[in-house]
Image 1 (spheres, rainbow, N blue to C red):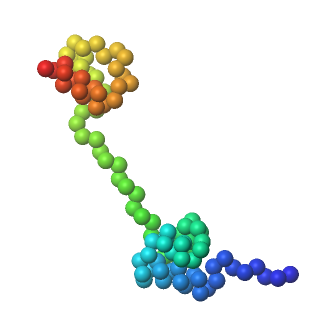
Image 2 (image 1 turned 120 degrees about the horizontal axis):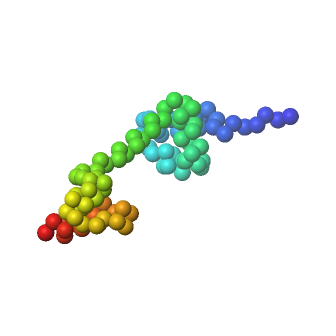
Image 3 (image 1 turned 180 degrees about the vertical axis):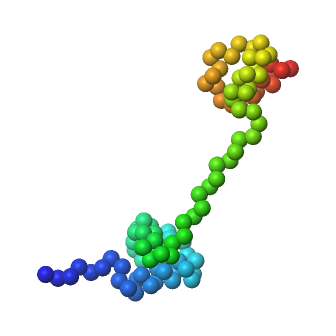
Length: 101
């Protein structure tokens, strides 16, 4: 029985680690160079303990009143809000501007 060749021989592992840590190449570029998938290269870098995940974008906090608050303001202005619960916040804000004038 013959031994299976490793997916990442030592020289290839050293090469991708060097590309990533020293040359600061992206995982996508390294994958193209070595002929492997991005997922495979990323997994190998993780197993070797050198991969640093990109920070996830932080959701932007909405400013201004909430939809519920806008609906209450409309109700306070004696506007019948039945059927407007599914409207977007932007649409309700425009409607509030029209009612307030």
